[in-house]
Length: 85
Image 1: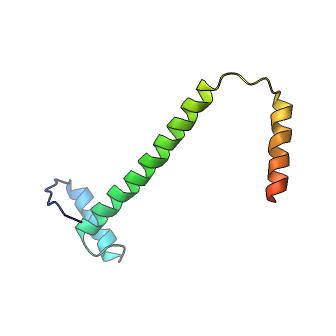
Image 2 (image 1 turned 45 degrees about the vertical axis):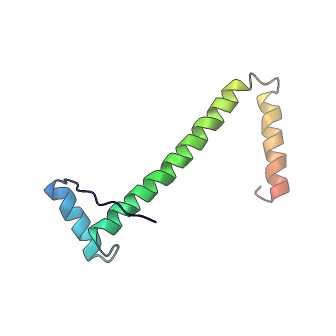
């Protein structure tokens, strides 16, 4: 895996925060901290895109002819089968 060197500018407060995380033993250096932030952001973006797609599919599927009570009964049955209820 290749690497790219970046130069970033932080406020003093942001720099102090990163140094505190390193001092607490959470990270070994600034780069490790920044890479972790990028990985977490990538993960969140993936979750967001999946949710956005699910919402789109739900809206595109049209209006259900099921009643709220019927839907709840289906959910309860599914949870009972899974052992979560």
